[in-house]
Length: 602
Image 1 (cartoon, helix red, strand yellow):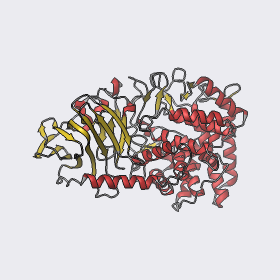
Image 2 (cartoon, helix red, strand yellow):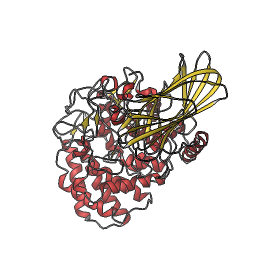
Image 3 (cartoon, one colour):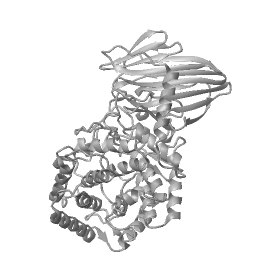
Image 4 (cartoon, helix red, strand yellow):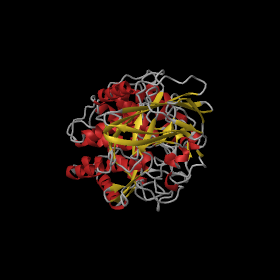
C-alpha cells in the first residue's frame, strides 16, 4: 500500500469511475459499470491485482489539480531533467453507443523527461490475468472471458503475458496519447478516439454543467467540486447515485469494517434531492426521484435500505479472499448484506423525498401518491418493531430512536402533502398515528440530562439524533434538542469531528473502533445554524473544509488523531452534506428550512 486514501483523485464517465493516485497510477476501476468486477484492483492489494502506472523513470515531485470545474485531472511531474504533465479523464457517456474509455494525454512542458507506463489489467477483482494480444507495435488487446480492453498508444509498446509497457522520452511541446477502451471480447475492438478533440469535448461538457450551479456563496469551489463528484457517480442511464466509487476501504486502519458502497442508499434520499434542487439542478433531482420510484415500485412491504444502480434488489455479500485488503484491512467484501435488513428510517426518506419533489413542482407519476399511501399503511403496521437502524447494525435488532423519528416523518409528510395538495387520505387516522409515534419517541427515547438516546435498549448517544430538528420532529430551540446536541458535543466529538456512536459501548456486531463520520459532522453544523450559533457553525464548517484532499475530495470517515481519511472514497453522502451545509449557512431558503417544514422548496 503506497498511497493514502487522500492521495487519490476521481475520474469518471457516468457509467463507472476510476481512482488515480498522486503517483500517476490508476489503482481502481470497475468496468463497464460502477458495480462491475474491478479490472484494476491494486488499491485493495498489490500491483499484481491490476493497475495502470504512468510516471517518470527518475525521481520526481508531483502537483495535481482538476482542470477548472471539470472531472479532468492534471498531474505535473517535475524531474531534474524537465517537466511533463499527464491529463487523465474518461469521456462523458451520453448515449448507449458511447462506450467507456480511459484517456491519458501526456504533454512535455520543458526539458526532456524519460517516462515509463505499464498497463496490467487483472479481471475479476484482480484474480484473472488476461490473454494479451499485441495487434501492432502501438496497440494491444487484453481478453478475459466476456471482457476485453484495447490499448492504443502513440509510442511503441512491448507486451508479455503480464501486460503492456513502454519507456519513452517526451520533450517540451510534444504530446503523446494513450487510450484504453472497454468492449466485449466477442466484439471487434473500437476505433480509438482523437484524444485532443475528446479532451476538449469532455472539458466543455463538465464546464457547461458546472455553470448551472446556483450557489454563489464563499464556499463555491467546494460546493461545485462536491456536485461534480456527485454527478460523476450518477448513472446517466438510470439516475441512480452510488454512495462511493469503491469497496473495501476500511473505517478503521487495518480493521474489519470494510463494505461495498457501489450501490444506492435511501438513507440520504431527501438530502440528495434538496441539495440538487437548491443548487439549480432540478432535472437531476427529478431523475433521482424517478429512480427512487422505480426502485421501490409497488412493494412497500419489501422496501430495502439499498439497491443497485438500476434498482436491482439482490446484492449478495461475499468475501474476495484473494485480496490482501487496503493496508491489510480484511475481509474485502463485495455486495452488501444490508439489502436484507429492516430499516424503518427508509420509509420516512421515501415519503419525504416524494413530498419535497411535489412541493417543488417536479412532475410526478400518477401512481406516486398511491405508493405513499401504501407506505404509510406499512409504517402503521410495523413502526413498533425493532430494526437494524440507519447504521445497519449486525447485532440484534433494537428500537432505534432515529428509526422511529423517520417513521414519524413518513406519516407527517403524508399528512402535509394531503393537506397542501388536497389529496385523498384518511386524515383522522394518520394524524392520530403521527401523534402516537411522536409521543412514544419522546417518552421512551429521551433521558433527562442526556437528551435523545441511541435506542430504547441502549441509553447511549447517537449522532443520528442530530436529525431530529432537521426533519422537524422538534424545533431546534426545544430544551430536549439542545440537551441532545450538548451530549453529542460532550461524548461523541473528537477535536471538532463527530463520531456516529461509541462502538465500545453500543454493540453493533462488529469489532470496536472507527473514524469520525464526516456527514454527521456536517449535520452538527446544521444544528448550530438552527440554534443561531452562527459563528460556531461557520468555524466548524471551515474546519471540515480543511479535511478535503488537495483536489477537494472527501471520504466517509476521518481519523482526527492521524489526519488520515477512512472509509470508501469519495463519498457522496459526505459531499452532499457539505453542499447542504453551505446553503444553510447562507441567508434565504436553504435545505435545512425546507426539510424542517419552515419553508417550501424552490
